[in-house]
Image (spheres, rainbow, N blue to C red):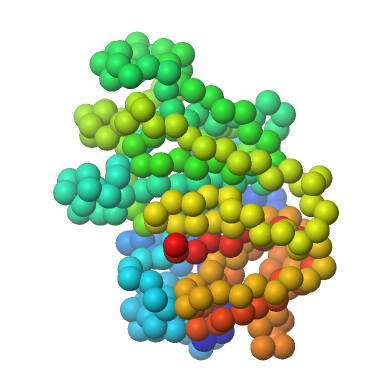
Length: 305
């Protein structure tokens, strides 16, 4: 199976910025761009001619062994851009057990890699009190922000958000969100935008003891080829691959999701060249055991543990 190119799924948002809209000439107000998604009603269409008319869900079902390899799931890691001019809502995602019992869905843990951001940017990740009733009252009073933990971020930072952690992506940034299979979000606070809140379920799943983890990968320290772990969880892993000219990647029988987050590059497989421009994503199927990254670039490689 050759590498898979997917048609991004664009979604408007009240808080949308214009980093990606300008780069890709998207409709104004596009805040979410789903690069890889096999979740119900949000599946990417396949762009490869040989799979014309299929979406990612179809491809997984019909070509499971070639695409998924030794994966024991029929879902794929999700990757989506968040292009935010304003702060996103304060929210929380359920873990696997709660999502399965209550929503008949998957749990959702996620991570954010920062491609672009303004000075003094930050994300909400966690809270400074264990008192849930105090938090709930603060939501009603409109002053929950004083109980939230803000983490400063800059270009090249990677933040991991486990299920159950209260969080929000911050304003003035473009991040790629890479995470597990679920699609359930409980909105806790929305800055008076008038959208529905989900306080009962949200406060059932909030774990006030959780903390985010942040790793820094400064772009000015790229001196040689390297592969460093950006995020590691039981559902997904993401490696930060810096290539100066050329680098061979060897893998086991599993798919790799490659996203170019610095400059442009080419992926070479069996002497065939596949272009991968800045912000683009390419799915390398499990049936491919090695590939070359060629170019002065940074690529995120997402895969199942």
